[in-house]
Length: 254
Length: 292
Image (cartoon, rainbow over all chains, first blue to last red; front, side, top):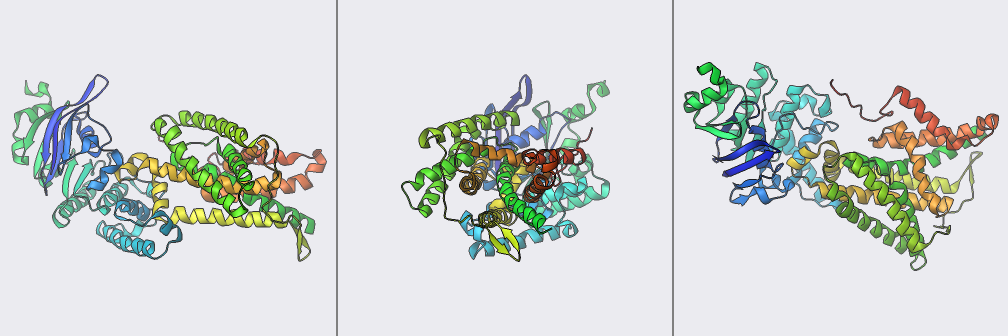
């Protein structure tokens, strides 16, 4: 579904990604792991179009993402969440998720201006989809709350809702469970599994909690200092010597 | 007492027109984080263009032509001035709008001349009486038009899909891009809207004060409104405009004589300073709390 081919990115002398290639298969949950600074977020950013790579290409359903303007990538069916939660903080939860739906709506500027006929029917139809997402994420009680006023865990959940409202083919999640307690993590893990199974969304996620990663992902890719050092099923990764070394440090092996 | 009410009403009506000018600033600030120094010059430019078109077209066609010109101008500003400055610090954009202001002033006066011109859009300036109160007919029409525009814009921003997308852009560029909103399109729309606001402000203030260079200084009246209301709040601009309009009028009439008069010009700034003491983000501005 998505092929990352030999991507290089550097910030000054720092090489964030150093010739990384990988593939995301349709229908899977792929976990991207690695120590801090391994290049995981850079990888998501380059897929999503935030960065242009110095070298290499990314193909999504045979279209080259690296030559596309950033805002066009969402229209292909790629949605994402951010490591540091990027919600529209002044807008209500409902409006945030409606914005996620933006691309599915077609009415023109003038029809909206008078909120008439097609524009109105369209608004109502999409509102129904959004309400389903809200129900599903169990956030009905905060629909009208400005997103910026919510606690962190709920903000992460709203952000997931905004991404899902676009009905993406590929969902990129950058640390969806960071800073959450066990119960919240279990909720999010359940939403991810449900989205994968019921909505048939392909998911690539960055996560630090190894327990969660091993439980929910079909495959795991390991990055370290901009290089891919391992790839395989959770079982294979657990026994990969390079991965163990990267995580525990060389000192521990001596 | 009746006189005081008359003064307050007169002030409120003028205040609505202040709100309108302030709204031009708020819209652009909200969507791109830029304080648009050229807003006053856009108002002057729009009024000059309208006066110019009036010499060849009837009123309705002249207004339409000016409208089209302001929208075209907005699209050009986005492509020529803003797009090359994407992801630059806000100060660079602010400086660009200062340059843009001088440019518009120069071009406008270059084409249509620097001599003061009258603008008559056919609203009579004879006051009329409601239950013993004298009300300026012109101010009433001006306030009604401005008010309708302001509420139309608020409604558009709150309810429509494009309005929602524009609010999203103002909130977080990166997140807006990730859901597929094109920033340059959103900016062109916002500048077009603020160009239209400038045109309406230019019509109202131009026919009140005459169309000449000093019309661009109307922006100075919007500053205390922005400080009072909060620079990123549309309701703030409306309410603060009313407060400034009414209070400066009342202050001029009732406090002015004791201090020699002429306090109307600086009273709003005094009020704004006072508000800044207690509410540094204005009455309705979004308070930014930073963790340290």
